[in-house]
Image 1 (cartoon, helix red, strand yellow):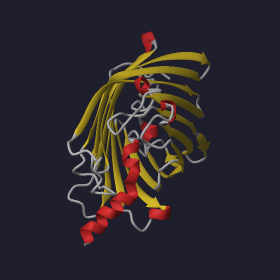
Image 2 (cartoon, rainbow, N blue to C red; image 1 turned 45 degrees about the vertical axis):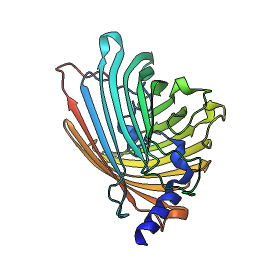
Image 3 (cartoon, rainbow, N blue to C red; image 1 turned 90 degrees about the horizontal axis):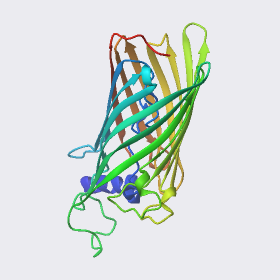
Length: 314
């Protein structure tokens, strides 16, 4: 009985949103964004490695918590004003959906004015989406139209984006899964996403910085509503305080303003940076309607910088 109740909770948490197939969204995306925006290649001539692992619904009593993992690597070559990178995402969306997305990333930087930088980026690769009907929690188990075999599709993937950066401000936007624009999508096809964000950097006394950030994500609008999923609008707000460019702590909030997204999320972030190593931890807690039904989600982030014996570029 207890196990059945937990499965019911999972259905309430993900329900039809299992079919929305939204991209992997990390709470500390500010530290590495090239999986969502290829223009976000770092502009210093050091190799940067970034990895994050996300464990969902820990403590709900499942045999295995859904896991998502992200690996980004990028390098900037000042002689040709270009950044190069790669991104790999493994995402278990709920119990039945799995996504693997691997792509190469290129960005070209343009100095518009003193301390103003425009970056244009393009990424290309493959995306595989798999749906296992035997692990899905069906609202109607007797539905004769439900699939009985594992569904899997591998497609060519393409993203485009830009970033405009200044000492105190960062503005960016991107469109992901461009081959699927105006195309009918299903459980094993990723709908196009529109991502937009703005981030500030406010200098305070005593070596403190405040970093407010806002992000918007739209899932499915570019597919002309020819989808099996609802059009989703997600908003992310966060405020991070950083001390001496070494340690930080912050709060975040994610909410859906339309569609089937049903779980608002509060994030608590903490991290530390030392020379070539950066480590961070985020605790996500569902709030609102599902506050008493959901469980916690943990995110661990590691970032490494490998010197190349070249001077740092602004």
